[in-house]
Amino acid sequence: MWRNPETEHPDALAGSSNLHHNWETVDPEKWVPDGYVVIRVDSRGAGRSPGYLDIFSPRETRDYYDCIEWAAVQPWSTGKVGLLGVSSYAVNQCVHVASTTTMSVLPHS
Image (cartoon, rainbow, N blue to C red; front, side, top):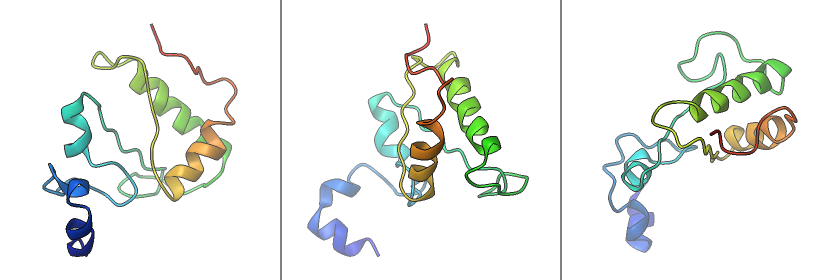
């Protein structure tokens, strides 16, 4: 699977063992050395999260909001929280998080 991309774009896989990479999220081995913290958040009932899926629901919007707010106030956080992902991660970011008008959009102090 990785032979062709690695041959054509060796820089894309350089610096990673690919042990922690997941298709829809960033590779922590490539981002953490540059000072980023990588947190993967699965919706309830998805991945290894308990509960049941309730996609595009107010509950899921609130869960995303709570995760972002939590990450912003951790002692290791600068308060700047970015989101990145494809597929359902991207849809959740665009539909839910961007439409949450109560979410703070400025870094925490």
